[in-house]
Image 1: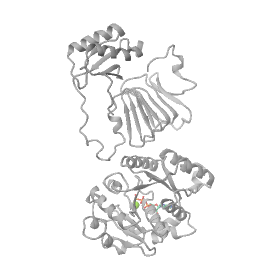
Image 2: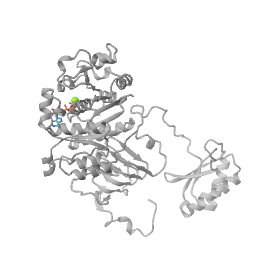
Image 3: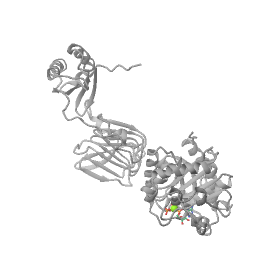
Image 4: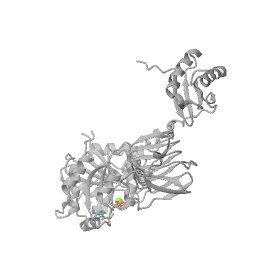
Length: 232
Length: 268
Ligand SMILES: Nc1ncnc2c1ncn2[C@@H]1O[C@H](COP(=O)(O)OP(=O)(O)OP(=O)(O)O)[C@@H](O)[C@H]1O
Ligand SMILES: [Mg+2]
């Protein structure tokens, strides 16, 4: 059995929508295919930056321009362009992890999505990094590190070091069901964990007046006051 | 049938790797298995002294690996226990003299010759550690109820998993009185953080120090709590994985529950 690649695939990368498409198809077919995901997105696509990536297939600039104008007209998207020229080259095989065999960190290194969700226990000496938000279904042990460009959410015990909002997102939070961190960083601010935090209840840390403060998440949920659900 | 190579490791030094290796090795041999204990702490050998065999060393593990002698020639028969053999470390060499590929070869030989081979790993996570875990089938991680020891054990557990070895946990040097007073980490907390299969809780026991000075195996001293615990660990490793772990704090039924919760599964 062969798996049919869809002619158009969409995913969010950074603050843009990345579309992988088979440029060998006629422009009309591509337009029809593009409508499907964009109709689903509705207002989320408004003003979004769009990257049209022909992948292995060849696309000339006129096709990108044609499709871009189509998307702007029908879905009010923002700037549309081809993929950036500098290709990300994966590290030569066998270089990483060759020291320890199956390196536990490998699957995360090549992760290219926005939000990283992992399950399991991150142990002392291990480090998890996410471009934007990081969700761990499990525990972050003492001596382990979690680093994220956005929020860090640990559905378990947070006993290690968590650095959210790296390097300069002061709105980022660190949330844990059992928050007893060694250290928390948000943007450029650092707070040492204290033994006073009792844990065993959902708490979150955020920046308030240039200080990292911890609060009971259920009692003091800052997001409850938002007028409208928004994308984090 | 091929035997099993089990590495005894901890990360942190002085937590009881050598004691565990000698004691469990002796217990397995007393249960009728053919056992080799191998001192992989090249340059800092200890196992020979703990077993009271230091005056019988002619060849060592480096000689075996360098094919200066046969494995059998380096294996020293224990004075008291049949079927128990020590393969000593070299005292003069550096850890880097043995390469990981040598270990693959050595472990193959050990499996053919013995039912169990226990490797006494050096402290740390450098070359000596990497050698010891390279070709092991299983690992026993020894940890004491101290924050630093737990941290190091956790690091080692991560490295073992990365090497596709599933580790089992022994918590050593527990002092129930201190735990009761809240002055020592409870083993419940240790197991909670490390969350691997628990095979034994060993109390701090003066008899351990005495036995390692006299070379009398602790597992043959019927009234030693540590000795009893080591005997039970050996049974768990040898065909009785469901034997409950006895709690030094006396909450027996509680521990049986934890044992179940951790899912003492057979890994076949
Ligand atoms: N359960 C115990 N009760 C009392 N003393 C113990 C116990 N376990 C170990 N010891 C003592 O602790 C000391 C260190 O033990 P051991 O040499 O086995 O540790 P190790 O991990 O092999 O150390 P190293 O990292 O230096 O090789 C020894 O003096 C030993 O007798
Ligand atoms: Mg030792």
